[in-house]
Amino acid sequence: MHLAPHIASLGTETAFEVLARAQALAARGRSVINLGIGQSDFPTPPHIVEAGCRALVDGHHGYTPANGILKLREAIAADAFRRFGARVDPAQVVVAPGGKVTLSFALMMLGQPGVEVLTPDPGYPIYRSMIDFSGATAIAYPPGGAGCGAFSADAILSRITPRTRLVILNSPSNPTGEVIPRAELDRLVLGLQWHPQVYVLSDEIYSRLVFGRARHTSLLEYESLRERLIVLDGLSKTYAMSGWRVGWGIWPGNLAEVAARLAINIYSCVNASAQHAGIAALNGPQDDITRMVDTFHTRRELLVPALDRLPGLSCKRPDGAFFAFPDIRGTGRSARELQDRWLEELGVAVLAGTSFGPSGEGHLRLSYASSLDELREALRRIAGWLDVHCSPALRPTA
Ligand code: PLP
Image 1 (cartoon, rainbow, N blue to C red):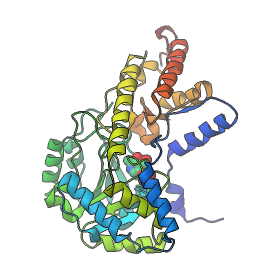
Image 2 (image 1 turned 60 degrees about the vertical axis):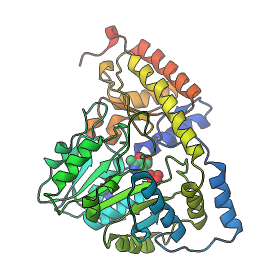
Image 3 (image 1 turned 90 degrees about the vertical axis):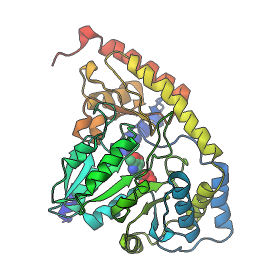
């Protein structure tokens, strides 16, 4: 079969491959703890499920407008105002089946051979995959966080050329958990004034998952950027709704119409009942969300210091998302070796940092969207393995 050549440039998310391997091991009766996949382990809050079911019973089984039910787009706009004081016209919102789709649409619109797109490395692997697929050239920059120093606006501004068309930002970051400080965003937005040809895609899918004193600053708060800002957000992570497939983009100018036209061509609309559940999620009580975020915080406090104490590992405390990104260089092993061996030998699924780009070498990503008991058990198994395989005397020298 002769497939179009650009199909070969599509990458993937190792998380799904590791999930499949973990599930296959579990099906054979192995006890597997999955710290690989980045999805909440909580059930969707009951009032949201009820709204989805009610929508089906009430007969919401047809197509909706391609850009999403107006009430949902209004709820998204109201949410942006509540959280960031940002005025968003519901006409600028395009609801999509998950957060990912906004990224794909942005690259369909702006990516092409000859243009450059700045993307974090380590970063969410689908950025790189879709940049390559679009034919644009990916230019990596360090996102800040564990293992890559602090986020710096200069790291982005210094990489901008006349060919740069898009900068992808992700705060809180997958995989490092870095929350970009407001002062650096101020500097970035100021610097971007000199590069009017550059659009920004701000992936804020983890924006509600921020702990302690850290605060998420949305790019929506910068009026001067709004004409070239695309915001990616959705319900997957915080509302424990990754399988419902409700995400959205907030688009500038006439790009919302272009996104809606892409939607018509590709998926027609998001499942109607899932959109009704989304309305309940955004407009309903937020107590369940607060409770889930508090629980993630508690888990971070267990996992991160415990990883930091393990021989050969060091782990900084991330401010957001639900990932620890420990530095494993002290073990003398590659990230891929630990990913494969811990899954096969310990039944603990983690992801090699290299799944997030070459700069992820020397790191693993562990998701703490698992119960405290599972985290304790995973730590116990890992500590035992490191004792046997990575005591200083046994460590490979190369
Ligand atoms: N952006 C980041 C940084 C993510 O980690 C993910 C999911 O893992 C997504 C976007 C996509 O989210 P969704 O499942 O809603 O498509």
